[in-house]
Every structure is written in C-alpha cells, then in structure tokens.
Amino acid sequence: MTRPFRVAVVGAGPAGIYAGNILRTRAAEAGIETRIDLFESLPAPYGLIRYGVAPDHPRIKGIVTSLHDMLAEGSVRLIGNVEVGADITVDELQSLYHAVVFATGAQRDTAFDLPGAGLKGSFGAADFVSWYDGHPDVPRHWPLEAEQIAVLGNGNVALDVARVLAKHPADLLTTDIPDNVHAGLAASPVTDVHVFGRRGPEDIKFTPIELRELGEVPGVDIVLYDEDFGRAADETTGERRAAGNQAKVMARILQSWRDREPSGAPRRLHLHFWHRPAEILGDDAVSGIRFERTEPDGRGGIAGTGEYREYDVQAVYRAIGYRGTPVRDVPFDEAAGVIPNDGGRVLEDGVPVPGLYATGWIKRGPVGLIGHTKGDAGETIEKLLEDHAELAASERPGEEAVTEFLEGRGVRYTTWEGWLALDEHERALGEGFAGDVVRERIKVVPRDEQVAISNREVIVR
Image 1 (cartoon, rainbow, N blue to C red):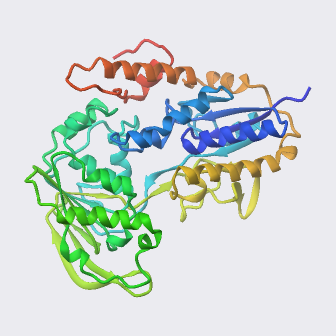
Image 2 (image 1 turned 135 degrees about the vertical axis):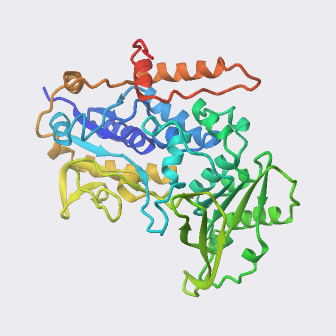
Image 3 (image 1 turned 30 degrees about the horizontal axis):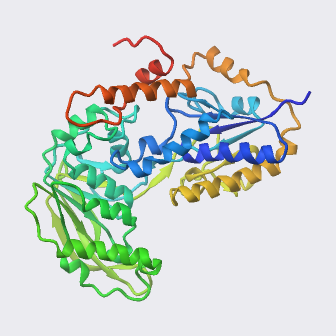
C-alpha cells in the first residue's frame, strides 16, 4: 500500500500556514493524499502576527482568526518549539518527509553601515519589536531612558516603533501587551519622538490606515515642518503620487496635521522628511544624530544638498528593513538575505535541490502584504506538486516517526492542542486583571512557561 505524500513546512507564520492550507486543498483536488506537518521554532504559532505586529493593531491581528481556522481544520499538524537545523537537521527532516518547504520569514534588522551605530542607545527596530511583542528569546528588560528619540525610516515598522514609544502606556492595556513591557514603557521619560525619512512626503511607505491611526493617539501632538513640504518634487519622484486615491488620502492626512494647532500634549511625535542620516553622535552612548538634507535628483532618486542638521537625542532606532536568517545546511544568499530559489524551488549553485522549497519573505525578501504572501505560497506549492511524482517515488515512514524522533532526542515539542491551552491561559490572565480596563489577554513571555502550559506540566518558579 502506498503511503501518503508527506510534507514538512518550516515556519508557522502566515506564509507557512498559507502554504500548508494551499497544499492541502490543491493536493486533494489532484487526488493526492497528503500528511502535512507545520514546524515552528517558538512554542506558539502565527509568527510575525504574534511577534512582529504592534499590540495596538487589532485589525491586522484579526488575520489570526483566519489562520486559526486553517489550523483548527486539522489537516495540517502543528509541531512547535522545534528549531530546524538544531533540534532536527534538514537531512533528518528529509529522511522523514518527501518535501520540505521553508517559510522562516525575515526576522533580523538589515545591516546599516552608519558611523556611531554601535553606540549604547542605538537599536535595531526588529529587536525592539520583538521585545514589546513578548518574544521569548529577547531580554525582558529594555533600556528606555531617553527623553528625545530618533527613529530612522519611513515605513510601517518605523511608524509602529515611534507610536509605541510615544503612546501613553495606559492606552495599551486593552491589548495583549505583556506585563513587563507595560512596566518598562510606563517608566519611560520620553517626551519627543522624531521620525526621519530620506525622501519627501510624496514617497512615504506608510499605509493610509497606519498614518491615520498615528494622529489618533491620545495625549500626543503630531508635529510637521513646513520646510519639508516646500521642495518642488520633479516628475520622476513621488511613487505614492502614482498610486492615485491612496496618495491623495495620504496627502490629506498630512495636510490636516499641518493645519492642526498643537494641543500642548505632554508628548510629541515629529515627522521629518528630506533627511539622510550621516552619523550617530556620542562617545560611549548616543548624544545626538547628524543628517544631511536631501532633494530630488531629477532621476527618481535623491541628492545631498551639503546642508547638515544635528538633533539632540539619547536613543536611535533603525527601522530600515528586515532580512532573512540562514537555516543550517540550506543554501542562503547572504547579500539578498533570502534562500536562493526559482519560483520556490531551492537552488544550490543554480541547480534545484530535490525536495526543498521556499515561500514568503525568506523566498522573496521582506516586501509585500498578506495578499502577496498567499500568491507567493500558491506559486511554490504549484512547483512542489509538479515534482510530486518524482518525490513520492521513495517511501517515507509514518506520521508518528517524527514525534518519536523528537521525544527520543528529548525535545519538548508543543502541539495545536497545546496552543489552545496557552491561548486559553493568556485570555484568563487578561480576564483576571484587577483594573478598570478589559484586557484581551496577557501574553506569557518565558519560553519554558509557554511550553509547560501548552503541555500541561507543573510550572516551577
């Protein structure tokens, strides 16, 4: 009797869950019986939706509902708290599965060769996001000691970082913010957060929803500078302008803030344009930052004007992009920060590696939204199913082989049922909060505690 076609998907964020769900559906349509296991290095699923989206974004986190439904359907088995490349090697995984799909995302900050970037008080946005989202593998304390803060970048991550830094912590209590994060933000002395972009207002990479939400933060004034809006953009600049209605919405939002009188709020969030970072200043710790003013170069880019500005800040957050992390024994393009691939088939020296595939940001880089992730997964699964006959020609062991392997190696893996237990526990913590607000949940941060709750073990403190 022929055994089912067995596929391992590595990474339980949106890319991995979509890949598993699309494979389940398309394989069934083709009459192929499958067994799909979804591996996750963390004890809980959902990847950047749980650990990379600001806690005050309930609309974006609503994606979890659809991801939950896909996993609850039962055709894709979740195996959490397993690091592929460490707890189990890729070779070992291939001995248990006909195919392996990597959906490990992009979790590191893009390298930024800026003088002073190594000073105390200079941070990568990815690390800060992991901290405020309660990622179990980052320190639980964050040094929030600065009154004046610079955030470099004009994308949604920069906006998230700036908003979380400027927002009054009490306004985050209705979210799933961990207790240690709330306590850290409550002790922050910040008064001013400055967001700097190299280009002009026409080229901001924020989405209209993100931008609009920024102006609705209680107790925070938005500050814009007329000089940043006085530069005449040439016809080759202004990518946002070409987006039609979206560009008009963004322009209206910015103009409404320019027309608004300051309220005298205790905190201010400044948006600066045409600023290219030149150097982070300080001896041992950040004491300021220096920029060169920029202008359109007439060819779709920017040029320096030779005019420099310095700002007194005590912390700098670099939000200039994410990049992928290599998986041990899997080809990796260090320059691009992705697994080299052709439509999802993993390549080594330009040749497809049998049985290895990639999808999501580790495949194409950290660009695009959820819709792109679905389409991307569809392309990869199409390639995988094209290779099905050749891959399925050799037998693989049954579905219990991998759990027996992990147990034999002493790996405390978690399951979908375990996630439901942890989910229920975190929601109960929120319900038990002794305060005036209703808390959605209180995230459990320590990895061992997450695993213990998931596996219904006794927690030893």
